[in-house]
Image 1 (cartoon, rainbow, N blue to C red):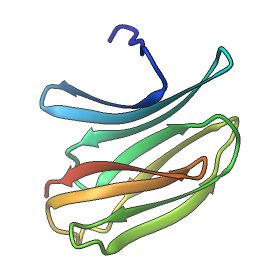
Image 2 (image 1 turned 135 degrees about the vertical axis):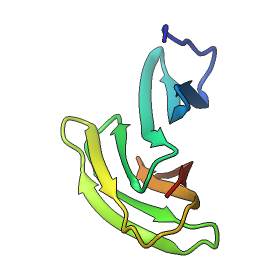
Image 3 (image 1 turned 90 degrees about the vertical axis):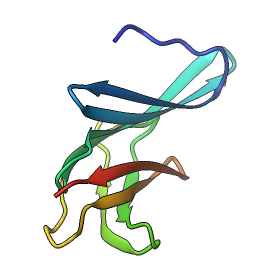
Image 4 (image 1 turned 180 degrees about the horizontal axis):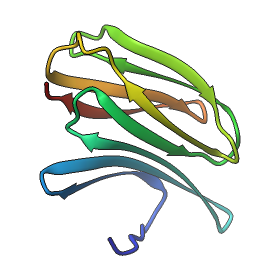
Amino acid sequence: MENVTTAASGTYSLVTTLNGCSSSAITIVVVNAGEAEVEELVLFPNPNNGTFKFRAKVSRDQLMPYEVVNVLGMVVYTNIAPTEDRKLERTIDIDGGLPSGVYIFRIMMSGNSREIPFSIVR
C-alpha cells in the first residue's frame, strides 16, 4: 500500500483486504501548530477464529484498557496493558465458547474510546 495523506485533522478508517481476509485500522491525525501527531489502531485478521492481534501507536506512553463486546453490549473479554515506546501489540485468544458473530474491539487511547468491529467465524 502506498502512503496515504490527509488534508485535515480528523479520524480516518481504513480497511484493506487480501485473499478474503481484511485488516481494519483507525488512524487519528491531530495537527497542532504545524506539528502532526498520529495515533493508530490496527486489528488483524478480520474475520478470525477468536485469535487475533491488535497494534496501537499513541503520542505518549500510557496504560491502555481494552475489551471485546458482543452485539448485546456484554463484555466478553477485558484486559489492560502499558505501552512501551508509545506502542502496544498483543495477541488475543478468546475462549472457543464464543459463537460465530460480530464483536466490537474497544480500547482507550489517550483518553478516547476507539472501536473496531470484527467477526469471529468458527
